[in-house]
Length: 399
Image (cartoon, rainbow, N blue to C red; front, side, top):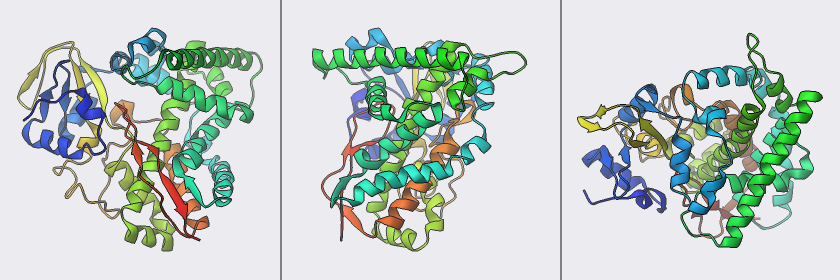
């Protein structure tokens, strides 16, 4: 097949034909000129997640920054060693166990009424106008507002949290001005200083919020360090918020492409959970996840040397016909178990129950309160390496 490079995986509105070609003709493929490897079939992606002793996660944040503007690499927003998302066992096992003492299902279930109230606050604002952008008016602010409240942050800082979150996720390649880079780095420094202050305060004066819960978490005398609390809070806000944002946007985009399904779900909201799951498979927010080989690894007859970057293509695996028959068809009645929308194995997203609840409630309230809406321009995809999501989804209310 033709030579492909990393930009082929980033800068495209529709990566799925390329993924299909990779699965068929080169399921284990080395990219040029950087030498990264990609695996695209479901079975091989799952293998990469099931064997952290062969394909480690601990250095993966450096992969994201290596694809970023070099001026931003000097100031990474997250310390890999203190962050569960970029750790391997036994460090990952320890941090996850401590996190789950605070982030338990019953705590998530208690948030349903608050999620619905916040969703309706934003829908009230949408109903006051004829045109709206689903991303800016609901999908972006909803998870940020909720997570900020859960963490125990003053709601008046919502705008700051959005700015800080965006600055933490910027991974563009040489397209920023010096002024834009300076602004991003300043936001990252503000973000770190804010969390350092709030963690010190919660250690001294605990409250009924998750930062306090993380500070107080204790398993057999083992407790999280302040740096680990900071890392978890950052991941919950940035990665957690971004995942939910794009789950809502991608799901609505797919729903608008299937108007008959939109009408069916309006008539029967009980279908929404199945719709959310199919959205996560069909157009999930996590496009790919990188790993490093710790030793020589052979996948599908191809030997990959040690210390190589391997990109597990989640979005391709979720469209693999060997796992999901007729995978390019959006079908909420299909068997969806096993999709990789939230990852797999020990790195399965801890916030998945919360994200699912947010997605379900967002669609329940949108379809209940806005009787009819339609596209009002072109949706625009973000050129991100790891995420699949929309920059904008302009809609109009059909009154």
